[in-house]
Length: 316
Image (cartoon, rainbow, N blue to C red):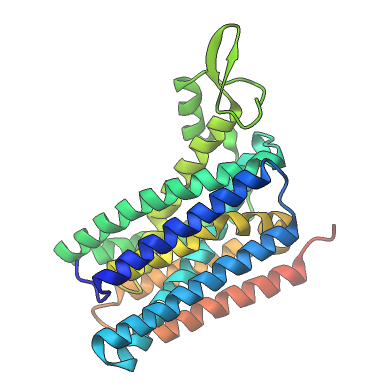
């Protein structure tokens, strides 16, 4: 797997992520279990987005220094930005499912932050593995691009068909499997994952929630990772745009939780984006759609869908 990023930039990226997670965990520990306000979520969201743009600027300077070409640096930083936006957009679908899980299990607001933090770490590890494997497969078997493209188109059609319908966790096979594998208490025990009832150690509902959040992210990663491979095959850009999108997931969850009804049509826009990206991937050997056009299309679809959602939002 070839990448344009120098070794030192990989090291900087790893250090960047570890430092961000450390700060997040320290703040989380000091704050303790508490309900996240909209203002706090907004501030954290702006911080994560800002850090992503700072990293992209560093990436631009690194590529400019490495290649001596501003044109190449512009192209690669635009690939990062497009990939970041796509992953951030598709993460919205994750968030709606997380909302469903938290509502179904009646997770107290004070505990939701810790669940999301653990889920984010798991997502980073799992997606790193999936991206490296996916990059290796693409390098060995070019035709897999067409498989990814067809899969994205089918996923987009399926998402459009399912948009507006309320998913039912009672029929979720993952939940049924987890309940068979472990006895679960009917009550929470603070932020603990295990508790003791009648002298036996059993799982709390919070552990069940953590497992479902992790499984959900794996399922959605299968959709989102092929989407970014349609933008770039550079594993560094694929990985960094994915990770920076995930880092802001917790803050974005609490923002969308407060405004979920205003974005009730967003899944339709995400479905169109998936079909567009899948089509771009299918046409890659015939006509390569420029990254700038891809970015413009994605931004336009999101803007139209969000305005449409705001205009048709139900009164509350």
